[in-house]
Length: 217
Length: 286
Image 1 (spheres, rainbow over the protein chains, first blue to last red):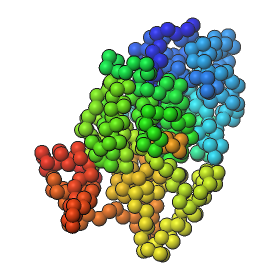
Image 2 (cartoon, rainbow over the protein chains, first blue to last red):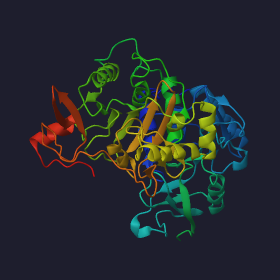
Image 3 (spheres, chains in turn red, orange):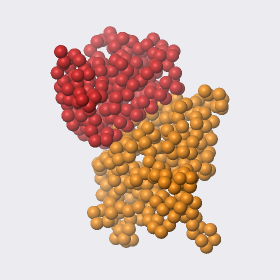
């Protein structure tokens, strides 16, 4: 369980720069590579790497999944490797959500005086992609079930940016739009996928359009 | 890799817990453009008030492959810049450059370089006073409430009274700006000349105030507007009829140098001035 091949100095620094790049350019898909860690089943190297970079004893985290056995294993993994404290959803600074959006109304959104106290959710989905221009709105790159395409705008985005997500319901994105309506209060998101790609959706980003993509048969 | 570094210290001097905290705060700062995130400013080998805020951001960002440039009022070779450069070099071993276009991270005291910065670069500002409302309200609790409620009437009145009294807004450097239509922000003591470069830039701007313990940010492609009135527009410094005594440029930010009874001018951005002397066509950002 204890990761011995995670270089706390160099790996953290590299992941942080990738993360910062993602937050500065919301919706831009980036990738973490060459991480020599073996996270428990159910979470990707990207999710683990991001949390290794940000968690320590000063902050609390929570794992949100319906699989109870898996939940305990993952919690233990992060406690051992980061020293971070386990918290409930209401008081966690970082939440790792597996394949299912937690109840957003329970999560910290900060106060008007200190909006930075809003939580960060690392949400692991099946696949994140920047659709190629010819596929815009159709998303052939994502085969199989439940996919959505997104159009984003806001600070960090030149004009608009398009994205495709697999393993996420349209309804969930509408909930995210809803929770970040009262800017500067809100929750910041990082969406990770199985191939260690991820993108950030800070609260300043507006989702202007969500479309369901029908699976290609 | 780390062969040339001093022993007994962590890579980039500050410990990993400090870096992690600063990194978390930077991400929140980027997520809420213009909002000042409090952070636990650490003791460093230089005194507070000498760029420790910017330095702590730089040390939390920097990796072995980075190329660093540090300027003090546009100059690569002044005392503050040289000291910080030496410090980062000894504790990280990274490459140092004076060329704006070659740097991946640029730490600056009170200037934005003349040349156009690109998306891959990060500009780190050293900030003495992060609170733009401090000139009208001395209490931190009050200014925090004013930001929370977007209650910016006092600063608008201040600017208005300036115009009534002097027919001009008397703030030179540290000209207050509105970020993404939500927060009024202190852009650090950059001259007015540099303020328009904050608007819809390609580069990420990070601001660190070490003594005041605040971090804030302007992401790329973010609207940054100087405070102005419909009938009294913001304007930049006027260098009409003046040119750099070294490269002859008439379109750069100039420093005034008084020698005896004579006034001469030269480019504040020394690296750019050098390039212009070699090639007068070197473009500056517009």
